Image (cartoon, rainbow, N blue to C red; front, side, top):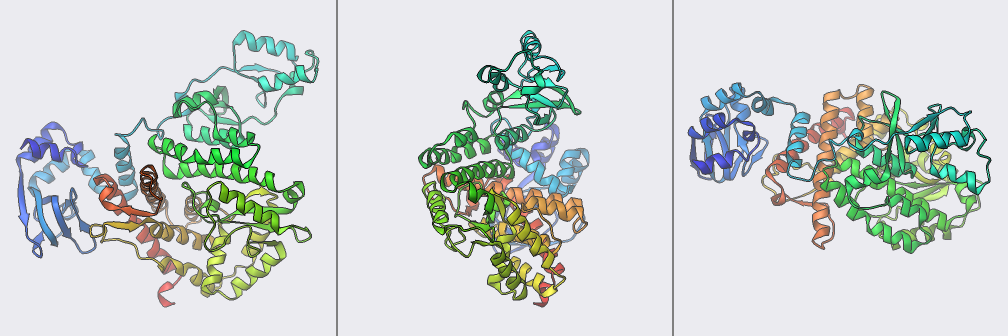
Length: 579
């Protein structure tokens, strides 16, 4: 009996029961055995110890709870035993009695998928390091700042700062003076009697004290700064320092972005890129959501691409090209380095040298970004050419929606600028959206790629391994298809889903479920890849189901169901059944 109690208390949601409730359940639990091929009815609650049970559209395996929904809804059902099965059997009346006593226990079975995924995620993080998900700016030391008027002298402002022992000087709540500004007074021989506003930086980067530390890190990384001004209901209350934020993460005394800025050659960058996996490991072990890790890594990758561009191109290129990334990098969803997906939209009148682009690709290869097998690379003239040539391509793709043309359109739709002038890509996308009509055949052809792969819904319990890239592709491309039809400018899958909710295509509840499901897919893929890398194996998209915990299996099952609903909606919306 003690063994039964210990087993049940480790399985969600039985871990939510009180000691008295758990004892009541254990006292009314038997162990039952079923032979393969036999049929069982929804009379009592089952928890599988070993074996497999199949419902109409799902396979239950070890530690799964069977018949809960059927008992709650008083629904008659019959399931099939696929493998010899050993189960704990809990009497129906006891299950319902405990269900009505314990609201948390009851809500687990009744809550929507998004809430369930959030509950399961929270549970999965409990045994990890302190969760970065719950840490907020106010949890760090907030350093005082000194407030002065712009007409105050430099000298009086500095004296006030020293008296208050503050980290920075805030001028009229709109500008800031830090130690780096004050050094100009000496190096440029500026009179200390001058107004303090003359040496100030006008763009203050702020963050609310209730905001997450993740956003603080992202802002520091994006703006390459060491300090953020903290506000409370838009009122400045102090600042947080880079070193305080980093101490939360680890013992590192620098941000990778700072090292990127200081890199003088490709070898310096190579050392930095090799450390990105360590950073990813660190963020993942802190419990940060995979899509947030992707945003940080994408931001760092873009800084790397920008620095490589500075090594390769002169200023004339910066004014005359949009250097773009596509694929998962363009969507801001790449975490572990994959193939290069890049190109360039070039000013029609610019005299460029293709060898420069070849050198760029070679440098990225040196940094660990493999060549793209499909040659979606800046060194390929097909993906690096004048704006007018790209426009001709788009016209042809829209006029002749072959599979190849639609895939090229999908690749370009995810493009984002990492260096150069954004106006060339912006003009190209404007041209694209202006020429998208209500052509149902074209949109159906584009959307049809969601049918390229089948979701493993109902057979996860039968498979040992699944290809997570195929699951991820379905939700990514479905969101991309809607983005094309409704001219959504956003490129990230999550932002596209949010916009679909904003324009009324899907409701808020379903949007939340999709975002949570997408994050589960990213998280489980990332966890698997990190385990492969840490074991000196190549990182692949193949996930071994046996390596998942009970909670992770439940999260994957629920996520696949949600993505299946999105696929069904997409097929109906774009009339794919009639193609």
